[in-house]
Length: 251
Image 1 (cartoon, rainbow, N blue to C red):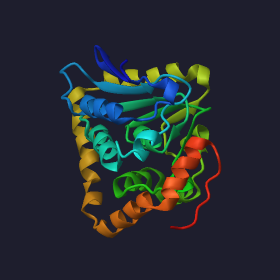
Image 2 (cartoon, rainbow, N blue to C red; image 1 turned 135 degrees about the horizontal axis):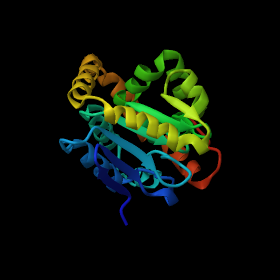
Image 3 (cartoon, one colour; image 1 turned 45 degrees about the vertical axis):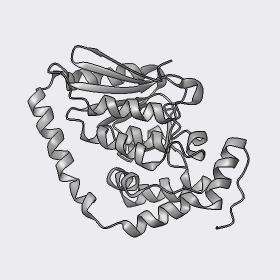
């Protein structure tokens, strides 16, 4: 069964997360499929790509069972998100449910996010003993600013879509029953715009942010890696899978 489905109709391409029974948790196969979808050159008639998901949850992040077994890690999701960020045409995320950790990053790496007001966004990594890599954290700082990033990272709370929209982190949040209409309005406007202009402006915005990649961060990488190897991380992941509160010891 395909866990990522890609289809095109004229100017609009749809990329659908289709692992709803697993809260669209990103396993190795999904990461590879998403990366492939956004590294392929768009056809001449494409104007916009839409990312959406099946089921009640948009995306719950990396599949913790695979991560615990060492099957997937930070580099694979970074490659996928980088491909979305660099995609030469606009990308719209239609978020019908919670977008957590890697799912939050997936949404925020898109150019526009249209969400149901019942959806929540956040990075709950501190609650399971992990930390985001430099690549993931810099996107939060870019989109949310220092105050919003502190709330999402250090507290680890999930923020309602309405608050995300009020803070300017996503494009729009509205009633669930109007989600498709609201998303379609954005998609139609993008599809009607001049394709060469879309490509030029997307490239301009991506290039303007490349300075972030030149900031030295080897010491931060070491801290993040140490957190990921810690006993606390193993305990946090186990507690999440077992649906209990973790017992952190700082080691």
